[in-house]
Image (cartoon, rainbow, N blue to C red; front, top):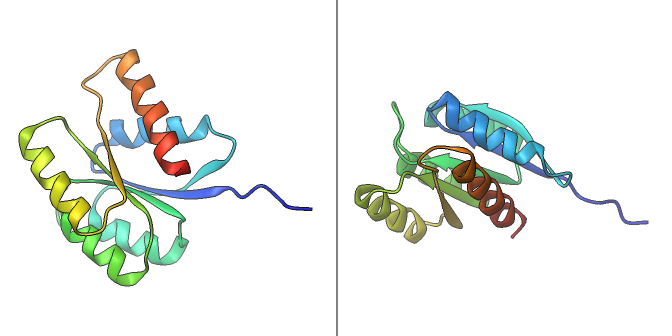
Length: 131
């Protein structure tokens, strides 16, 4: 008998609100779970090595080590699907494209605010994690 695999996700974002939104979104899915959270790339890399997640969601703009630096470190450690989370800005879009070129699997746009934005984030996030 085959058991359903639970996708283990590490969430790296310096915004406590965004971490909560992403974790809450993942908590609604029966086929995935958040195994850890980190507030920056340094902490994220340490948890990545300890927890061995299946997927990582990664913020782009963070203190200490930004998303691009952290992405390079993650992929140098182990090949893993990384979803970049970025604000809807031109600056964010350029960095997101660079992240995709450097090996990120995909990206999700952070919602501006409000319930509809959060539902869109949840639906897009869960769909892309399942890919």
